[in-house]
Image (cartoon, rainbow over all chains, first blue to last red; front, side):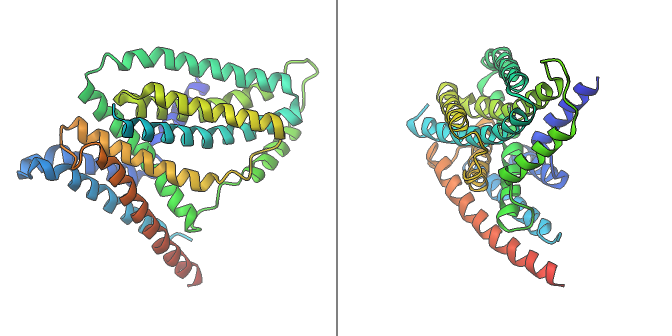
Length: 69
Length: 247
């Protein structure tokens, strides 16, 4: 049971390390999948907007993370 | 599958596998030299069989999922996985978190293994478990990367890339008998993080049926832009960290 718990924790750790980064990434995906079509964004702009959102979120996360000495 | 997709998948799988295999090799070498090779290699071998079973179990199942659903699921997982690598690589390059040092890890693991009493029997459970765990954890990352990158039809190419890297690391390990500390692991992780993040976003776009400008060429564009923004992020993070440590 303990080994299974460790294995699941390790598996979880492959995708989630910084909770704000994970949440930010999922919000960007949700934005791309649900919000952009509702806002009527042209189809050819949706993928580039999604890319820009992820990059901005990553930059913000790194900026915040670099403050910790 | 275009040549561009295949070559990008090959490079990404090769580099990801190279990095993970170097990490696994460090542990196996540390355990093997301090506790004996028989149980250590048995642990590593058992792990390789375990990983092969995982691929045999999940590989064919992936083929039954509709392609757009598969691209979306794999894209989300790949993006979460890749962006975690990229963030860490940026913070490492900026000096905010410590650089991954194989020689130091080797020393620590060797010291830890020496502290634990050795059994009188020939089978050493500590060595077996330590190697099984190290190879499984690193191998799981490689397995996931190969399955995810290969989901678009380049599974064979990605598998060849990953296998080549593994063989290369094993041969170097056999020849040198010490950790591969000279491999520029952090730089490689930086590149792999960028490639996996780009692949993840590309698959998500494809899964949502959003056209990418330039179609497959967008993957190269995303890699170039991510490289540019990551380099910028390193500079900003380094300056900010230096300022924070001064005050």
